[in-house]
Length: 65
Length: 263
Image (cartoon, rainbow over all chains, first blue to last red; front, side, top):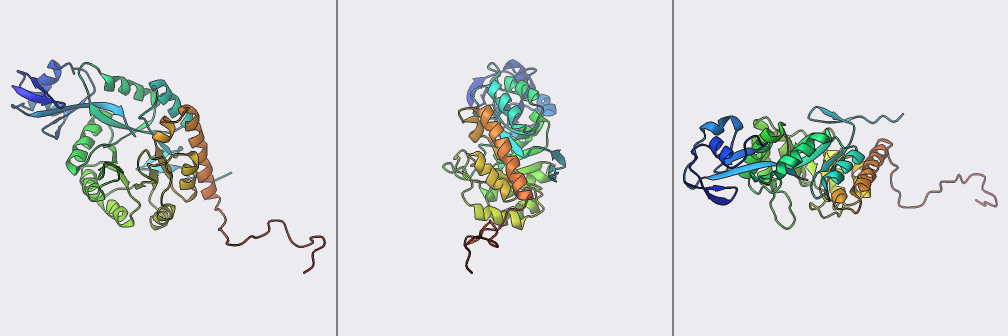
C-alpha cells in the first residue's frame, strides 16, 4: 500500500504501525508517533492498523526555544 | 543575608530563574557549555520529524541527558489546537514529562499567540494532566482564562520571538504582575540583552525564558553567564524594593550645614 510517512509518499506491505517502524529503521529509537494527525501511544503501535493513503508522523527530540 | 525565596513551578523548586532554549547554538558543545555557564535548571526542547537513517534526534537525546536539567518541551510551530494537543502528547511520551510549554501561533510574521486557541488547548491539556506553561500576551483577561483553564504559571511575551527588542510594553507587564501577585510569571520571548532580563526581574517577574539572545550571540557561553548575573541582579533589586521615581531632583548630600548656604 501507499502511505505518507513524515510528508513523503512511500510504499510498504506492513500492516501495523509497529512493524512499519521496524521496516523503516526506527527500531530501538526514541520516537513518538501519530496516525492521521492523532497521537498513537507506544503501547498501541502494534495494534494500530495502516490503511492506504494514511499519514504517519514519526518525531524525535529536537532543539527548541 | 538576602532572603531570595526559591522559584517554584508546579511544585518544582528551582534556584535558577533562567529557563533556557536549546535551539540555534553553533555546536552541541557550545549548547552544553551555555547551559552550564547559565546555571539554568530548565531547558526547553521540541519535537520534529525524525529520519530512520539520519538519527539527528537520537544524538540530541543523548546530549540532553548530559544536561541534568528539567526538560520543558514546547509545541512550537503549532497553529491549531489539534496540532498543539497532539504535539503535547507526543512530547509527553518522548520526554517522560507532563510539563509542556504551550504555543499556539496565530500570526506568521509576529509569531504572536492565538490566544483563543491557546485557552482552548490549555483547558484540554490541563484536563489531561499536563502542567501547562502558556506562551501568551500581556492581556489580563486571557491570563485569567488561562488560570481558569488550570494553568498555574503564566508566560507573557516581552516582544516577538527572536526579535531581541526587550520589553515592548513594560507598563502592561507591570500591571500584569500587580494583577496576578501570587502566580509565577515568566517573561517569555523577545529578550535581547541581559539588561532586558534585569528589567523584567526588577518589576517582579519570577523568571525569564530566552533562547536566541544567548544562542545567536558571538560567544554564547559568555552571554549565558551575563544573563545569569543579570537575572540575579534584577531579582535582588526587586527584593530590595527600588525607590520611587521623582519628577524633580532631590539632593542626596545633606543640605544642612552646607558652607556659604543662605536660606
